[in-house]
Length: 261
Length: 181
Image 1 (cartoon, chains in turn yellow, red):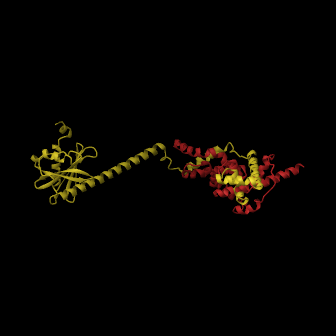
Image 2: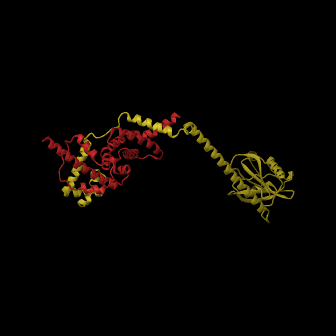
């Protein structure tokens, strides 16, 4: 390093702002160059003078109060109206209310979407089942044969409700794939109409109310009971499908009872 | 309401009040006047409050000093525009003050008043880097942040500021010696 390169870096050297490589280069240069060494000494002298002289202007005692007053006045002038809203208690409450409202709306929409998807899928499955040879995997009409047939095919035991005497004989059963899982489909017949009854473990709590929708000319009736969701699809009239659903509901043996048998 | 304002201000106050001395020192050296310095600090703090929403932690001192510095220059432009010279040119000043001065300094006996006068006589651009470095102990990076110039320029400006100060102080020292004789 020569003087031309060293000179601009001397203050950085004095202030300890150089990296190791440059610092060592400068140290080496100063050892052999009296001019640059002189610059450093002079610089340190100036530093010493500045540090020893009483040059610092501390804030006068009244300044802090003056600043705080000005700042608070400015703050009040800045937000004259929004202050009440920004009060912490009401602000937090409002925020919480808003969040819970948003959450409820979100949950509502999500549920509606899920239900619409289920309705669409069971309707499609019902229509497919009516096409040639898609209706039944097994053609038996009693629970005693059907229950073991589902064994190993599903990760749950679908309830099999026999309501032949009420006018809804079982024709058989089928495995189906709905809402990302394998589900049981029981096939009932009522005065020539096919009723598909899908059952799968419920995701939420019980909602024994019957909810009916129609899609593409078919009716879908849904309810949840004993941790199971039931979904009946048919081209029966709304009233007839409701009657079927009620019949199934009243004849469903509670799970606890079944386990005790 | 009062609870809230106090709480919100206390975050702002916590950020600026510890640096009120630094703010005042810089303002006083740049304006060279007691009353102006206090006015500038007050105005700068009100400005800082407006920008506080955009301040996300970090070095509060450098942040506040940058606002104080800008407020100082606005104040000087408004009230004492004759004091501000043309845009500062580091290279131009370089020609004058980079010459080698073989004189050895004996500054130890200098009076505070002499040092004070020499520093006040420096151009504002030199004065501010000296104040920020020697009195506030800011790093080059922080000085660069406050004065909005590159770190390399901070280094060369400090070098020139010190050489100027040294020349000025030796002159006044010599005069003092001659005076005594």
